[in-house]
Image (cartoon, rainbow, N blue to C red; front, side, top):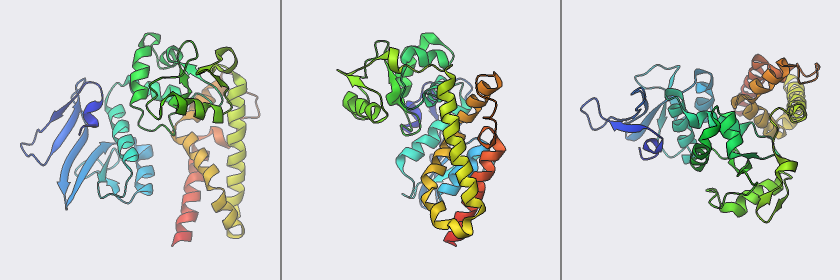
Length: 296
């Protein structure tokens, strides 16, 4: 409840005159994005979910099930039985908030996801990417509450002078600098050279490099899946790469790359499986089916 109420313009409600049911709503439209109640000896949470992503959470955790007493396509129930890490519970709550609110945070997180490895962006640049250059302060507030720093790389955001965040919430400026250095960004006296490392979101070379990498993962995974009976060990060893491709799909980064391609920025030969929702989805589903059968 505390985490749900930490989002902007939210309030607690108990509309059923039953203390067992507590809701957190978004003030803008009074829609609930978090339901809490006790059932069968466990606290349960109902959260709104993108139908395309509902199966994703249910497949990962047995304690995430179709929404209890709600639309099964648009809601999930999280059973707090200790099997789900706090970070993923918070991520599901944050996603639910974004779906019911006109959330600047959602646009900010999506903009940060587009910063490529080895590049940085300023707060003002991210604000502009999120639709309003004047909300640079809101960028800092949103990143301070980052629900998933592994997939939302807030360490790649610096101020207008290229300086690291002194109050970087995930370990301080030293940790932010360490993560940037690991990605090939030079950090000197707590500062990054923006002329050298600033992300140009219209730079075709960054997009092309990312797509080529994803294409190679896609092609290799398709090859291993097609011949999994003789390459099962190799397929299992390749799972970290397939997860990287899955994250690319889940973050919708491929959509931004496809839009760039449609504008004629990218070479014509980069129009294969990775730039296709069906292509990625079918490959990930087939991979999951093979691993499930192996476990059985």
